[in-house]
Image (cartoon, rainbow, N blue to C red; front, top):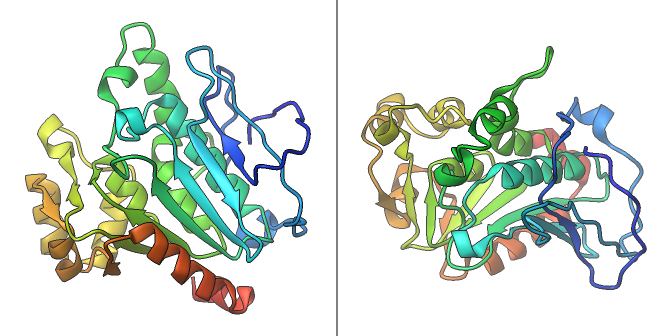
Length: 273
């Protein structure tokens, strides 16, 4: 994970991961048994931020509860939590952090504001001054790594030993949908809008959907969703098997389910996953 200066302990029960500057290390999750560290004292709290020349606001925050449930919040609500380069870095760092934390029993991922995630921030990623550097960083895959940065935001949730539950509302599009597909379970509002929109831009959803989607639905259904890029709601997502259940308050329901699972044996849940 990116090297950071130490900060004093703080009482706000939040561990924040925000935008970083250049020189990002491509941290990768290793085998589960190698990632686990001694459990943290959950009665202590701390805050850490990733600074950026463009914004000091954290892109992602992690809140740890005493029962071992970690809530990951995508924190770019003014842009519907769309994915700029700083958001990619922060989500990867959050997933690696949680994969290494033996004290985490369950994880909930959700978006702040009106949406889970609206997908790629094309304007930011393709900014004339940064497009080439962004492309290299997103697509670079060091020798021996199984995924690049663009794919890490989906794939690395599968490397977290604890179960990961995505709570979606508003829109869950493109790369945002692929982040949710990387979770073990998904709880959505009935009206949440889903789509793999990459076909509209002449690309494929290779952040993770081409691997994960056929595990959840028949191949012909996956093919239709990818080829058309059509938008469908939470009701249809449930019928197709793409979400686990529906709830008017998906975050509250996801936290309830996470707390229930956290009370079970962590070895058992890790083995099932």
